[in-house]
Amino acid sequence: MNKASNIREIRAFLVILPIMPYIIFSAVVLMGWRYNNAGLILTSLTLALSYFVFSSYGSLSFQQKSAGLSIFEAGAFLLPVNLAFFSMITKRRIFTTTFVVYLLLLGLQLVAVLLLCRMPNSSHSPLWTFIHNISPQMADSLSQVSTRLGSGFHGIRPAALFAFSGTFLFLLIRFLFTHDAIQVGFIGTLVASFLGIIAFRTFPAAIIYFSAAGLILIITTIESSYFMAYVDELTGLQSRRSMNETLINLGHKYAIAMIDVDNFKKFNDTYGHKTGDQVLKMIAVQLNKITGSAKTFRYGGEEFAAIFPGKSAEEARLHLEKYRHGVASTLFIVRGKQRRRSSPKNRGKRKLFGQKQDKITVSIGVAEPSKKLTTPDKVLKSADKILYKAKKAGRNRVMV
Image (cartoon, rainbow, N blue to C red):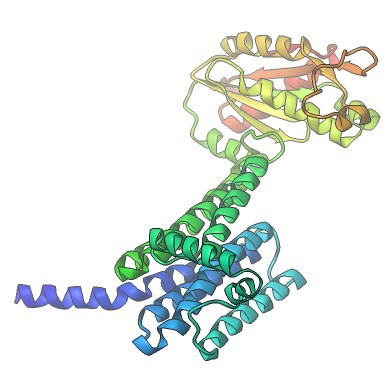
């Protein structure tokens, strides 16, 4: 009985296994719908259609192989190209003009690929025939290179290999510039789908790779959503939402510091919002280096916060004084138009003479639990009040 039951379970699993990628891609579509993410939906549809085309090619009869090969080649080429385009619209919403246009293009691609089934069978592609008419020797050389590459990559043609390589470099460059987690997901999806195409001679392996491509998208989308919710995009510090959760989990002994940039509004009005953002980034970089095992956050606007678990206000004050002194002693150079036009090689080589320089300072208020301040919220409000006392007392100081 046990043996028969195990056999039935294995058969049931084998029935479900081929449709597993479709289930995962459907989950990605639902996530894209929930997050209103056009790029995510289009990518999952592309993966589903590609998986359908490749799996259908594997079941073609011998007489259909030449047409099936054309479909396989077209699908292998179009998959990375589509991934490259859809990686650029992950911030776009669904039911926009961009989404509809890309959806129509995806449908046209599917129709074009399926029409290849009806084309007369030929041992060579139209491009090879065109080159052969111009230069037979060049066509023969290209045919030999194509055959060698195809045998090395289980039948994948050079055009598809170049498409995958180009898309990989494109996504890598985008990640280096944007540091967006979703771009890492697209890179992983590209690699997994490439391995899946190679593995279609052994179909179970292809199922695993295409399922992995969908799972990578799900994981990186969750990671990207977490980053948006808990990390401040401008400064890279943890956000106020993350701070609220930290306050809930504090013990009995801790200190909370509220930090504010002195005269920031005046500075912002004088030099502009872009320069103001540069100031906030500089403050955040310095705050990330603060000692005392502090957890740092951007509270909002030009206001920041630091939580010192297990430390008293006086103990935290020593670390905050060091931080305040570091900010005050750092010379801030206002980047003018001339600075933005300079090349990366020349940056830092010009003299500071003639450039606008300004001094940035911060005021800090620190509080700890007491008989009156029994909750983290009360301690936070107390630190905020002390902060404004520090500002009234002359700014650029730490008060407890």
